[in-house]
Amino acid sequence: MLPIIRPRRLRKTKWIRDLVAETKLHISDLIYPIFIAQGANIKEPIEKMPGICLYSIDTLLEEVQKSIDLGIPAISLFPQIDQKLKTQDAKYAYASDNLVCKATSAIKHKFSDQIGVICDVALDPYTPHGHDGLLRTDGKDVDNDATLEILAKQALRLAESGADFIAPSDMMDGRVRYIRAILDENKLFEVGIISYAAKYASKLYGPFRHAIKSATNSIDKSSYQMDVRNSQEAMREINLDIDESSDIILIKPAVSSLDIIAKAKENIKNPVFAYQVSGEYAMNYLYAKEYGTSFEDMIIESLTCIKRAGARGIFSYATPIMAKLLNN
Ligand code: PBG
Image 1: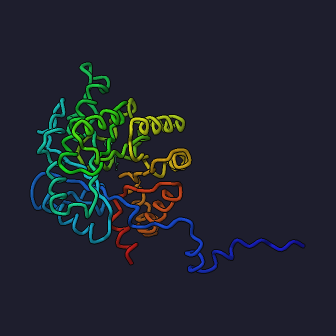
Image 2: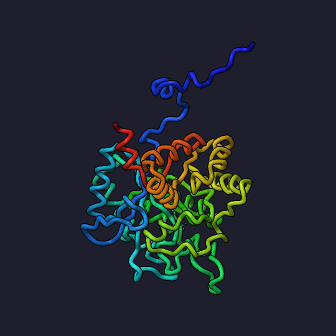
Image 3: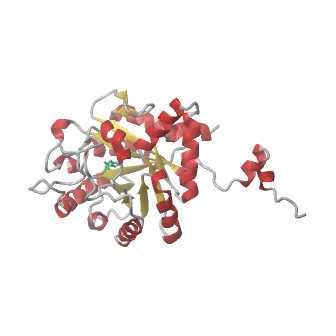
């Protein structure tokens, strides 16, 4: 009789499981998205995202210091903009002293290159309707090409404020080319682009939209964000962004796109990043609460699977929680 082949030998004890593990999370894999607002001394819990807070610039600087101490490599900033600053032309998006520009320069002034600063480029925090672009005069769709001009100006202001990477999340056609061109014209050659290349029109962005007070989940972004039925289209978007000189490709939501992450990792040379979005954070939190497991275990499991699929960097709201676990 043939002997039974026993893969379980490699699962017998923790030490051997750890030795043979193919995927190991490290704090240097994680990027911490932070919500910011105007004002002072604000550290306000975000209702739909338990454990996550909204910061003013002064308290943000304290949070950044903690992040550096925890070994977090980079943060990304998301603004909650006062309703009165939101306009149809989104002009506050490219005001050189806007909230994100001020926050970025404050961080860079205080901490220099001790931590990376990634700034999102899109108009949803700055428009009253919450779309990522300007609307056409008939109001029926975004005006792609008019939006490109605004995104480029927004990117320039952020880069001038000290952003290390610009992260266009708007999904307009041609934005990477526009942004690279304006950065290069202004000799900002060292500022990189992390483009949300395959960003699906997902229901999982709800808590984020609530947090930045931009729109509700009933808003329809499917004329620019991708259709979840498509995978070839994701590769087309990724290749276009690389042709337009994106440095890093970002895919989201993460766990819903593991196939896309794996395919991108196989087929392109640029680093592939993923974004564990607000709804994924909330799903893990609620599942842990309802089904008697720990939130930390849920987060470790999901982030490990995202890394296993092929993601290098992962944006996750749970980054500080993970940093504490990984540093122990
Ligand atoms: C804005 C933007 C969104 C997210 C990142 N940048 C929301 C959206 O597209 O409506 C979502 C992030 C999250 O849900 O955590 N362009």
